[in-house]
Length: 136
Image (tube, rainbow, N blue to C red; front, side):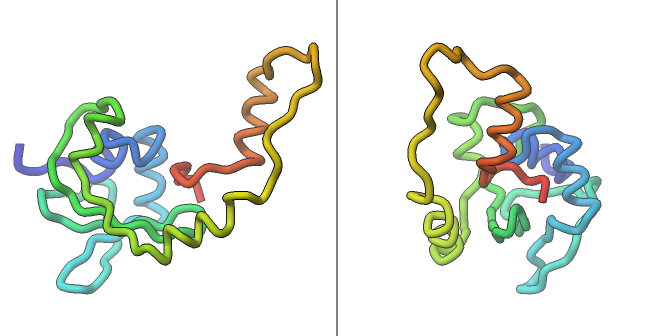
C-alpha cells in the first residue's frame, strides 16, 4: 500500500476517536499538509504517503506529525505509536501542561453515590476536556 486517505489514517492511528471526526476536521480546515515549508489545507480524500508531515489544529493546540507507516485499519495504541512521529514543538506541549496540569484537585465522589452514569460520564468528559479530542 503506497497511499491512504488522510481521514482514514488519522482515525486508524488513534488521533481521532472516529473517522467522521477526522473527516469533519479536514472539511473545516484544521488539517494541513506541509509542502516545501508551506501549509496547505487538505480534503479528507487526500492520499497520504509515507514521509508526509501533517499539522493539526485541535482544542487550541497545534500538533505536528510525520507519517512513518500507513495503516488501513484501526489498531491498538501500542501498535499505532510507531506509525507516526510526533514533531510537535516543546513549547506547544508545555502549553498544554501549563494550562491543564495541577489546576484542580483530584476527582471526588460522595460515598455511596456509586459509579457515574453514562450521562454523568459524558458531562465529566466534556468538562475536563482532552488533548486528543479533536472536535474544536
